[in-house]
Image (cartoon, rainbow, N blue to C red; front, side, top):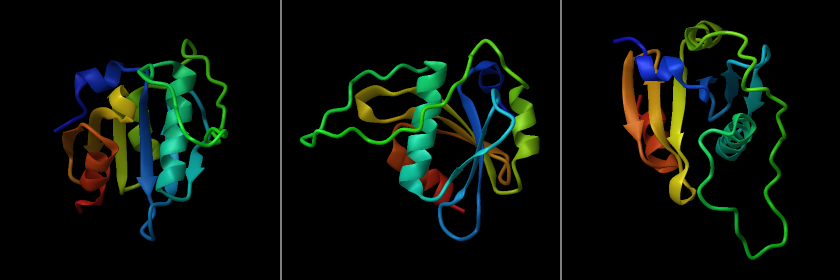
Length: 140
């Protein structure tokens, strides 16, 4: 099974690979040459959210609210969505063996909905929350 045509067309697809020890790895997108690194699950979610905010797709449906007066530290990424450097298929070449392609189709109710493709298993799965996403990734 190959990557779906929908995933090939979307501007917000990211590729990432995980190291064997924990939830560490590198995240690639079609707009930057170098990878963003993440060291844990929270860092992964923050890096992806920053990328989605930069390409402005999909738009968040709710604003962040908390009892604290501080907002989470999101790394700002300077991306021009009109200047795509390479196509989605190239993301799989950049990633190593334990690689995934992920397309977020919605950010409703403060969670992600989308599709993830596993390079090792050669299957595409849908998810409706970050918890489902983590279950798919950790289901080796």
